Length: 165
Image (cartoon, rainbow, N blue to C red; front, top):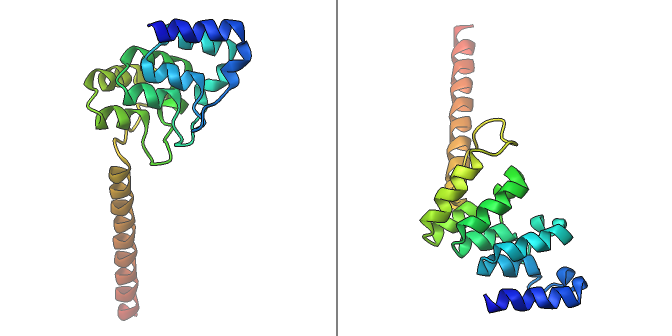
């Protein structure tokens, strides 16, 4: 908590620090997410709302960091502000915030994310959630295999029709 107040004090003295980034392109909102400092994050977003979708060098948003570190309240607030676009944002490894919460064993964060995700206004239908890049690749492979099978079936049908002629 002292760190949160220290950051607030620094920002009150020099608001331009909100736009500063660390060596991995980590913003002050990312740092708040890592520590779960939700009130500080709200203050940061009031001044710099563009940081909500900002991604660090690993392609991770503040929501990714909150989920990786098991901060369900922080994650829910970010999701309320960012909607499905933020929920579905993947990092450079192909991980969504939900996948990171799962991988790190943060079941409360997973539960909170899913409850919030299914109540978002910008869903026309319930989201199809992929928990890992591996699952996505498996689904893509299965789909390609089905397409190849159908193409082979069509070719066989054409051959049968030619034989009949």
